[in-house]
Image 1 (cartoon, rainbow over the protein chains, first blue to last red):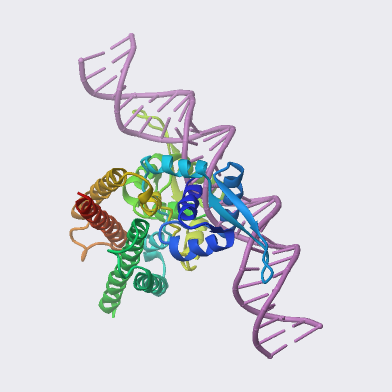
Image 2: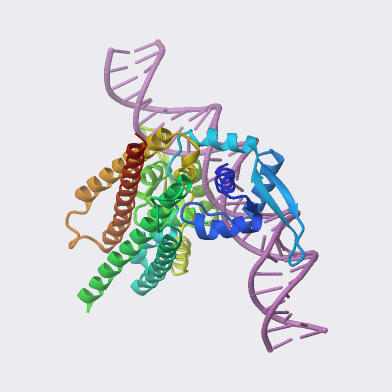
Length: 183
Length: 183
DNA sequence: TGTGCATACTCAACAAATTTAGTATTCAAC
DNA sequence: GTTGAATACTAAATTTGTTGAGTATGCACA
């Protein structure tokens, strides 16, 4: 049920539409929670049914109409009750690592290519996060409490991506070393 | 379908029983793939139906009988075909980060306690991985190729846990700093 | 002799996530 | 005047994952 709580956490400090939420999930929230467009819209419907959020239809002339959601009193209470409960670490299901485990069964070039692809992916995300840091978190001392907490989640994203890049590098180095000894 | 492939990758270098696989998943594989006992047994049945693995009943006198699984030719082909296909990064769904994002809504002590709990969890896992490293990966140069690839996955686990501990520490430091400025 | 523990495995209801395929509106560019 | 892109949202089958409750054997210990 945590997707609902993640949406609450996002909506509570910035009421918005499903469409914008999807973008937020892709850009800002992706470093700790991923959800598809379909999941988000479905969850919003459920949450409205339960009275955690309220949607207000906004008529637009220049674009399709939209529905602006904001958190209700009940929703805020639900979020706070959830916040004080202990939570467990996320389950990891990383295909790349399974492929490395069984990497000895295929041509090394296959694994190398995958590692390079992954390295680039994480490098790109890392750069994106650094840019966000520069743009929105320059002056932390004068930032709101909410912003400071948000920055902590960005730090997690930065560390996570940087760590991946480093692991890819060390693994690629090892692969290259192997190649040398086979020449 | 990647649980099946993870099981294949594990079985292919060491035929074993469902029971042992569950333990392997908890100890060795957990750093990149988590699955429950029920999932593993269900998946083994499906894989046997599909002819990817074969189970042989082993009668035991001192313990309940068991079923020893090993990968078939078809299973090996399935695994290799999967290995050469590109894979995407795992989806992250980390409740703790959502709680940090909305941390400003509750008492700081709540967040601090959660961070400390998480730090301890990752510290423990890290120590467990270091122990595994000492016990099984002392002399890498003379290790089999399979072992060297396995070591690369352990390195990922080590980095991952160490990175989490560091993030928890930096976040706790920040929290403590906040407390000071409020005194 | 009965209590707990490790081994070894099964079933089923339920919840969540993925995949695939849409509808519909407006604007801008060709 | 039609194509493509961005906005804004919907529907549903299928696959995965979670939760909870079982069954059954043999050993050690008290």
